[in-house]
Length: 357
Image (cartoon, rainbow, N blue to C red; front, side, top):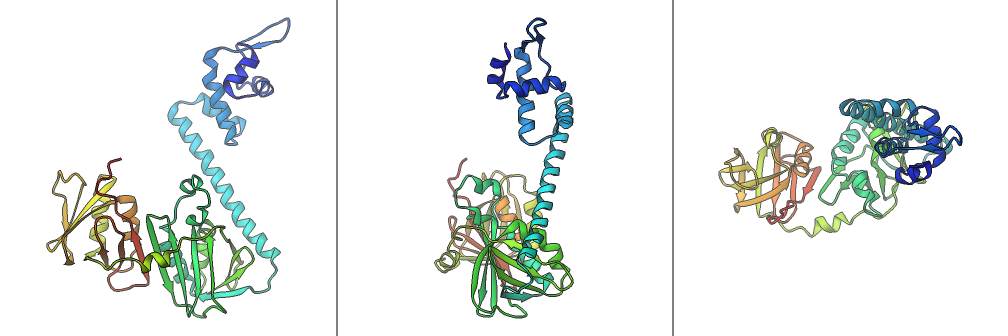
């Protein structure tokens, strides 16, 4: 087929095809010696389309050639390496931009949100951010960028950190060394906070300040870190928490045993049978007896289904050796928290009993 028809079939321009021919990546099947017109065979379509896709993710020509000429396993490895390099460069650019942004803002202090012990703040950020949505999930939902961030509320001598992906919600309240100058609330980019976590953890004291378009973390002897504010309105989690019914069943389970059982469970969903004898963890189809974990249970017997990717992170971040589950029924949020410390609370939505897809 002539170069124009081949270009239309592959999504490449004629000029791009000439460039790739000259570089040896995609030589034409034939070149008319008299006119110089180039023709391509149908069996070159697959290579041309793959070449276009690789260039669309900014892969250099040398790497493109290596991928196109490699076997499937080696090509997949090279592709993963390229994506990891791009992600690393993007993370480094975000960190450098945060430093530049702080410098542009000058050294004048912003509005004090709280002064907190660095290790305590870093732990709280790590715990609460497990409930954030992924950027891929929110890309399909306009206005949902706030679901990738951490909502911060300061005032009344405390600072509350909250995150949710609408299937889980985690919130932790911290008592600052120095409270806020006045009440403040906003949602902060989760990736910026994760990037700053290592520096925060090594700082004895962190001054959290509100500045235009975000917050600034000021640490003695270290560079300031800027975390962007996210647009959009954070879900009204306080109204949701206030409207929850009381628990009909409460189970207190050793955290390590529950995590081990979830790790060994083979399915994507897990059924919890909560009775006075303990908590039985099994597959939703009830074909096998499952494993019964020792638990202190009060209230009525209950069977609840969960997605393992929802339940496991909620349990793993609980503080202390024992985890307490407050259950309200098979279709209501379960509250998960430490049996002896209440400053970190996570809610997780069950899977509907008739869920079949």
